[in-house]
Length: 357
Image (cartoon, rainbow, N blue to C red; front, side, top):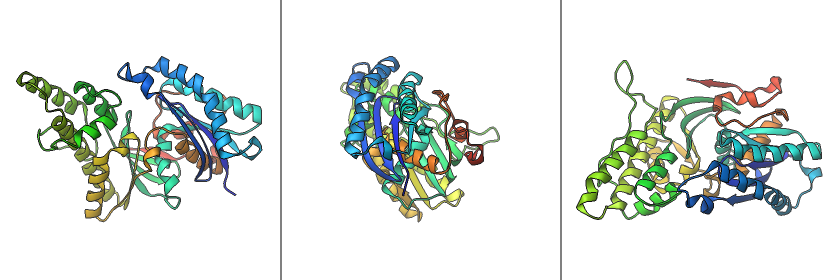
């Protein structure tokens, strides 16, 4: 029988608790703080931590009730430990460690990005490496070769702003509010994606040419700012056209690099994870490009694109069944490379392999 794990996710502004039995999600509770942070135009770390403290106990109770399960049936407790807002992470970590100690269960610290990779496993139980993961979120944009369980190679990444971060910043420039990803996606539906040519953000190499996989979105954000400054004196801004042009440029950069990564490394499947995986244009354009090149694309269900504990629980089941455990002394970390996952576990006989190029 598959293992059953209760997992907690509090890395940013969602308080989430889920219970997974193997790759089957028995319960998934998500309490969002979006409305709280909208008045500030973004996530305020101290406010996020306080909100997590208020919500985590009730979320745990709701998950247990929804799964109709008792502690005798739970094999382990897990929590996201990195990367993220340290204060926010500490809330989930402390809750998970306390539950593990009180109920005598093993504890696992889970890397947030590995959770996003495992989000697609929930809907596709037959999914197995090797494959390429395009991980696009508010804090990260990476092209990851998944060679095996916790065996990752970072093929490419953003050198500055993550794609989701760029969406938030451009939405702010356009006066569209927070979070930027969903609102730009919505506004862009009525805009012309070819209205304004914008720079893709290529990374120059010392020996000449451009990096085939790395990207930059900071320059794109600056180009949008300059475009707004140029157009404003003429009257009303063509917000929909600017949003559509910006979105199309980001998606084009992501799709081109994802296809190149997959082809160059002989990977036939592209798995997409992270909040930007919910973007309608990315879903459309990547599917079209993949089909044209004989590749398969897998997107997680929409509810598992943004932060949730179901993906953390799924990753935790895999780690638990591989024999890995985390010490109760494990601390929250604001930054931890996906290729350094082995630091989270004490079982040296089953340490995660990792390599970065």
